[in-house]
Length: 152
Image: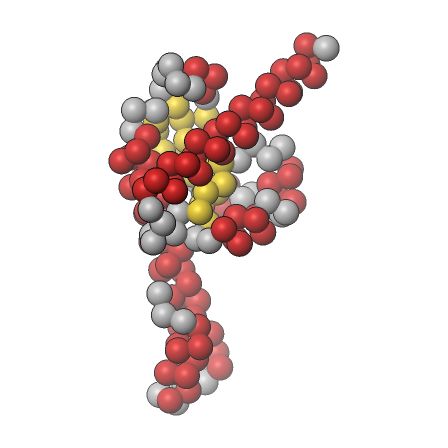
């Protein structure tokens, strides 16, 4: 992705007004976001196909509520607690965006039970796998704590 400054200078050089430059920046940002989401799905299919029953794009309402995808899981032995579970996922393109999302009200309202992944296309497969495993462990701890509270 081009640097924002490059886009602004190029727009000014070509005689674009502020609104046209803003639209250009928005288009570039959107296309990068779309590439990041496609990379998320591709990496899940490459590294976790055995675990996933389905990957479903969220609705517009889901997106408004902070959910990009819904992940459903197969019966498996590595993460048996995931059997037939459905979890929301939020896809970001940098660690900073992941951290920012974790402070948003939508994340907190969802009980922090959202898989939040930096799926920047430049990220290595190893880093992606590590993030997913850490997120699954984090959510497992949250669900286990909820069970302990319910059964107390």
